[in-house]
Length: 596
Image 1 (cartoon, rainbow, N blue to C red):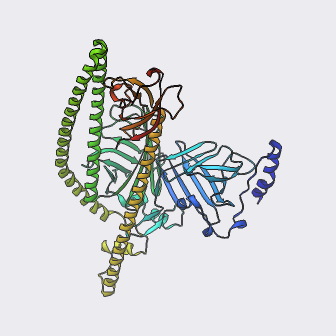
Image 2: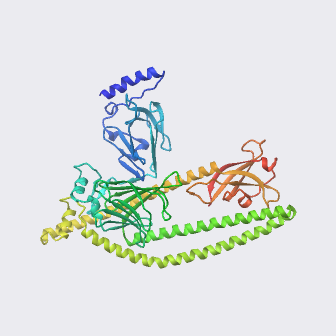
């Protein structure tokens, strides 16, 4: 009540003293406009309600306390900071009252009437949020005031935990919550104890959960053949002295921070120098959700300003998932080999083009055009040789991969057998008194032989389990489809942003190139953008003289543009000569698209 009074009386007084016309926005109390949150149309914010999003460097949650407001909480950064926003519906559709709950203003919470544009960015209509910036989409979020929390590559994670018997319960750290009680009853590392000895599979690698002789929890990354690559060790004792990150083979790492919680493990470390692993800072987060482990990683190399962010879902190892992982790994490897080969080819062709141009200049332009035709024939032959050699190389790689598949399948079979043994030895992840807990107790031989009634109950339990498994399968299918949709969304956004950056950075000019019949062509350079999402570009341009107005010049394209700055990757000759010298021509980029 005192806080409301201050925001309604003191803040207007302060605004009146500081500046004329200071707009004051006081969000209405929930009881002033609504009686229940169920009647609210939250518009574009509706899809985020009761969701939790995570990335390698932070967490975003949107909750509905049930009092007619939404609470958005974000935590992120190398030195974790948090920001919270309280949102209530505005008087008009698509508008909202936003209060920043932890700003530096001592008189009251900052508040404003806002709406959101199509990109999910908040736009102030009136109020005193100042330069506060807030953006939310299904793949990224940003909050800033007075410091910035940026959460790129967000992934929505389930807020429920799946028990061994298929029951889903809320993820909660409240002392009285079922999940926290189960976690406390399991001793040691709690819920993580139920996964000891098991191996999970991701997109192109595997993850094994185990404990060492000292009793520390270990997460080991494996290749599909079972070869260890990196192992994270978590020591829950005060000081975490036994925690470490070890590479095989690998350098010494310096642990910065570890976190061991109910369903999350986190480790941050740095690598000062090594010839085997890139220098930089590494941040890993693992979330346990029953039979799945979600991994988020942020890797910032010493020569990069921004971190590379990754997300992987590890599921129980099956033969079908192993085959899918092998297929994906093989596709990525073949693409990497092809990309590297094409890069070498482009460098060789650029060198040949430079030599041809130099020879044409030295020989005189009377003989230069004849030599240009001969050089084009040589380049065509070089291209044919390249395609032949590359196809042979890719066929050999495919043959080697087929041979490797059998060994990988055999390793997977051994790991799946070990998983069965580990699950039998692991403590049960079921709530006391549930059917799942009773079944687990029966399997350990601690109950009396079943009578007719017990057999009927057992059949009912089995039928219930089958129903749950089917429900889980359907839920998993929907989750996979949602994950695929979000992945496609992220890829489309990354491509859109990349093409926009290319368009801003490409510089074109007019030139007279060999073989063009004296007509001008467009050449240019391409910016260095990492990562290069689109390898092959088509650059659309307009060429005109300074005396001509924009839009009245000649339109053209440069196919398979590489940005060599030479006639190696020039456009087709323009239909006519320019009214000015090519050195004075203006060549503007009008659009950048990908090759078909």
